Image (cartoon, rainbow, N blue to C red):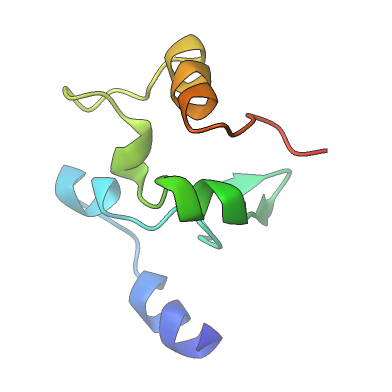
Length: 80
């Protein structure tokens, strides 16, 4: 399964549409301290694609707005 996913996410997104439809989790382009991440609770709730972290006009959601969304889903911003 991992290798199949690598083939799917292996190409660099070029267009705005491709970027917005990129899967966030375990994506080499979305990293924290150089490592890809996966938060199961976020994935299971709603956050799967880059577009899930953007506003209607394509800008990244602000921290306050994103925190409010996560609170409504009973999730936290940071995992400890």
